[in-house]
Image 1 (cartoon, rainbow, N blue to C red):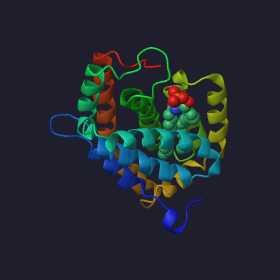
Image 2: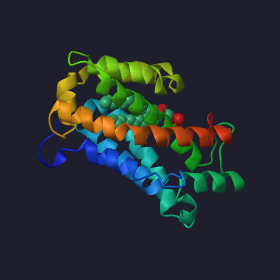
Image 3: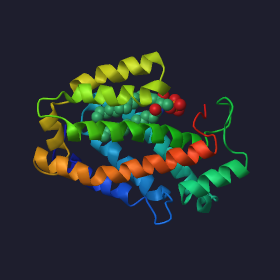
Image 4: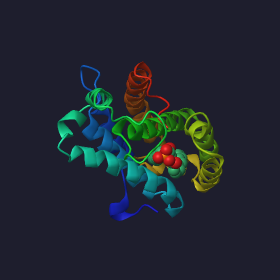
Amino acid sequence: MANGDDRCCLKEVLHIFQSCLTDQKEILMDPYIAGWKGLVRFLNTLGAIFSFISKDAVAKIQIMESFHSSDQKAQYVTLQSMVKYELASNLVDLKKPGDQSPSGCRTILRLHRALHWLQLFLEGLRTSTEDSSTSALCAEAYNASLANHHPWIIRKTALLSFYVLPNRNSFLELMNVGTPADAVEMLEEALPSISKIYDITQALYAQHNLLDIP
Ligand code: 1PZ
């Protein structure tokens, strides 16, 4: 569990996501990936039971980092430039997952769906009453988002793992921004940016028919 240096301030992580958005409504990939790294750090403070989730998130972060250190890194500065480049170069695995390594578009789609879960879950927490169950809020957000893209066995495992989540106030305190009321206030301020990132990505992927990359 969280202690000493392992502690992770969710406020900082959400601020990193805020810095993804440019005035031209583009999404900068560097802070997007840095934001995901912060979320994984936070997830790791919640206990080893979630390691099957953080491992997958880390694998996806590593795929994106490999693009960022490749010769083509200039194409991966924004989400928009990445989509344009990968589509123009026929790099997007629109059919079945084959031998080719996963594209940036496919990888971000997985994280994008997970961002939807995050948005719904944090919004649920923010607007919940003190006696609400964190695991029920988490399951509700999951069922309305990621679950629609996961096979039965992952759904079952994910839903079971949610039962170990601490109660609402303890969870808000784990965010490390002060009292539960402080955490709720922080969420109120930070969540609009997460929604914007989600909406911009969703519109871009819909425009290019990328929402179902297998
Ligand atoms: C606060 C408690 C944490 C709840 C996290 C809720 C998300 C549950 C996700 C369960 C994922 C299980 C592991 C593997 C999934 C992969 O199969 C899929 C599809 O990838 P593919 O197989 O197609 O390559 N991966 C995903 O859907 C991405 C999941 C990323 C989850 C990141 C959660 C970060 C949590 C941050 C907590 C603040």
